[in-house]
Length: 400
Image 1 (cartoon, rainbow, N blue to C red):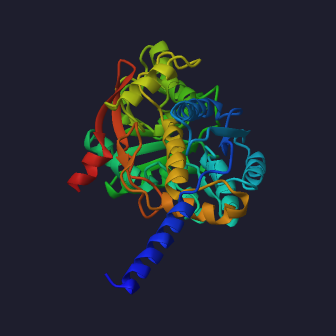
Image 2 (image 1 turned 180 degrees about the vertical axis):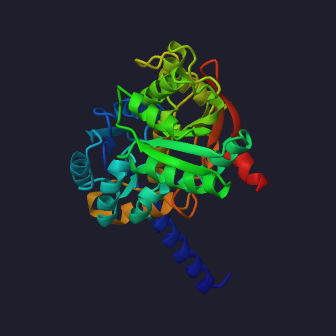
């Protein structure tokens, strides 16, 4: 070998070693402090409690197995209370020194928070928000939820295929939640493509107590079917009132994933299985993974979740916490304040190119160009106050 070639090889070796060492340098932090924007109070507190449980379960597992790159992860909680002003305050504080931000939980908060993070070029994971909600902040935000359009395509067509007698529909929704309103727009689009008339779209106040006026208005239109995008308690109250006033074809009721929580099924049982026969969107099922069973056992120990039969959509925050771990480790982030800007960019680029990531609870998932992940969504029918899976987006789109 010539001296020239030996010198070239030595230079390349030293250069590669230097670059590798720089990329995978040891962390300079004693702990990874990650802001977690969630809703622990207000009308969304029930959902926030689920997200909190799943997120803390992931942190406990990660720290028990050595943390992130050998350092523990510590979450810095900030309660948005589903108040845009408070949410903005939480995000402005979070972006000061953070590598990456988990949350916020709701689409209402995400509309305010994600653009703030994007302006400061900090990656945020409002994983339960819709694609339409994070779009202004792309690529500095991602969502683990399936896109609203594809979800509505699958859900509405599957429901109508099983109920061909439906020709006229009334919809009910919470006006203040952007994610649910967006879903309603697409649901209406796909219903109308099937020749179905949407007679009315009724706003229902959050955590309504007296729903009789809503039901009277609904039945006055003489619909064949009803689509709801409501909280669990309101969904059960409306179903009970509908039954009392003579609407007994429960299979002609579709319940949006927003209500897919343990209390929906326990309240239905307490009301005499009032939702039996209704169809419901499911964000998760009982997957055959050991992590699922472990998380479900822990979930049942939480107040109000004793009768949970499966994980709920809050498990997206469990997955997102592991995404953060993976991104920090695979990009060689150090937490060095002098490298904050470049390490934020590396984390953003890494998350936006994730393929076949092991979610631990859903199987492998990959990011799509719009910033969502190919996480499957399901439709089920409620029987004996328990959801029974009917079909999934994976099955549906494979046939199209």
